[in-house]
Length: 343
Image 1 (cartoon, rainbow, N blue to C red):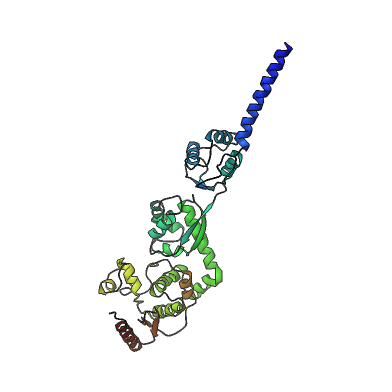
Image 2: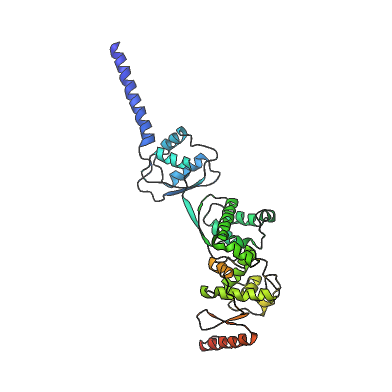
């Protein structure tokens, strides 16, 4: 009898030890390989727990899915739907570390770069290439006139919301959250360097400043002459003279591949065509750089009303106060083109 009791105790100890080892193995032994080919997992919005397990398995991020599932259940990680996001996984992690990391929601951010774009659908495309949502979802939001009115914009002025920069965002940021972030960044930008006050002193809204800056942006690549060019356009606005800005007529026609502005562009009937309509266009004709926005806000005080490319390949312009002087500059331009074998 005593021998039987000892045998039972021994069996229980062995069984208990084996069970304890299994639990130890499930929680504490490494389950993430040391030779990961992919170190970031993206868990889409609406994913089930089975989806998460499949993602980890397919990306080679867990050796044993059974122990991962056990620990996930024990730590109450399993939900419906699961926490979405983009998470960096470290080699050699055990299930405990992996589950805690995914459950804690500490995401890896992505960088969204906003630079050149002519229209909001291009911005949507660039953003959607980085974030989880597709561009159509964002475009649909930005075409909702009621929503745009709520945030203080229209389809025409929306481009003035975007300040070129590199933004750190969570991969699963929603279209509305992305727009809210842009509104926040826009406010921070205009609050700096007295920009809002400078616009008010000019009796212009930030949207109007941005629209003019977008024209300056497309007129010259030389940052040093942008304040002077902005001054030309402001002088024209001041006296009621049409802006007659070539980039606006190109935007009106959407003929963005043209290398030369012709009568087709300047006579195209559109509120964006400043050859046909006085004042600023209804909104920006492109995303404006910070340099161009500041060029408008800090424009040169002068009496120039005209400018003409020098034509020597430098990208520079000659400025004039009178039409006679402008015609002389135009002759210089044509002469320089001829010297360079261009017409």
